[in-house]
Image (tube, rainbow, N blue to C red):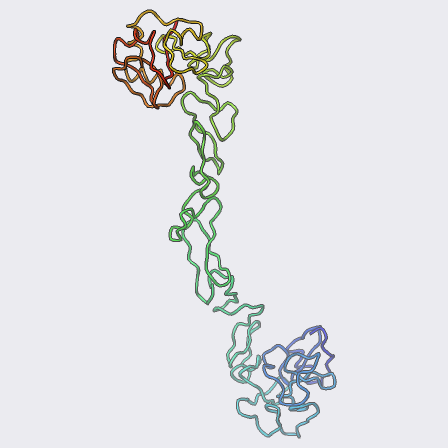
Length: 401
């Protein structure tokens, strides 16, 4: 104790103090035959002034001398009570023998003293049975002395609140799954994922099952899914990146989120990033061409649609809107759109995505209506469509020259 009063000691007490060491503030304290902190001062004095200010708990301040009134023959039970010669001090009372629960032991000076062997560091469980350094005497047995809120578990001191091997109780080890480490918080078991892994399915049994470094659906963190517009993503070292772009698209700005460039129509990136068309040319089907912007070269023919998206136009009007006329050969026109593959190629060239329908349409030898891209297997369709057209929401596509 920093405020502990100085201690006066007899020659014998000095020897004992040298054997048992110092108390707080570097001052020696003699507690009868038991030193402070050695396990002998576990109960208060029998009578007198009580624990004085400046002395450790359980000791009396007798004229600036801290004593254990239980066993001190010169202060037996109270300050100044000196036992007659030949008598001992036992449990704060003078007598010819030690009282019940107290043993008569010979100290380091060869003097007989009364000792509580249930708590005496130097006589734990019997005279002369000293505890080892770091141990205390509890109920007559030497046990590991733990401080600071820790407790003894076998041969170690631990804290049940934080020790994952002894969480809440001795021997209660926290169990964990793969790719995780055990943690103990407030006496309850838990786990933490090791770097690069996550418990994305929230199941303790399989631990941290997800490798966040390469999971497209859990990239860098659980539920952080990679998504690339017009392309396929990859998770590279916990970072979402573009791995491939869809046909007709490219990642020309090298960002990690999209394949933003349509290389089939972009005159600055026609067919590939950085491939620019000449002045006056447009990019049609990934090829630089002098065709009007609303036309595409498909199956060897120039297919065009009205640039203003005007509906229900026949092919004379549709081709005329870009300064051209319909091709004169009906058979060539028919053969360029009457199969699924040809109809799909025509649809894709204009960047459309509607389902394809081929039937014996009279006017629909390439038009969009009702959510479908229509082609015709009616041989008379080209001739009919030159001058006739369905009314309403019908966007025509015509071969022009």
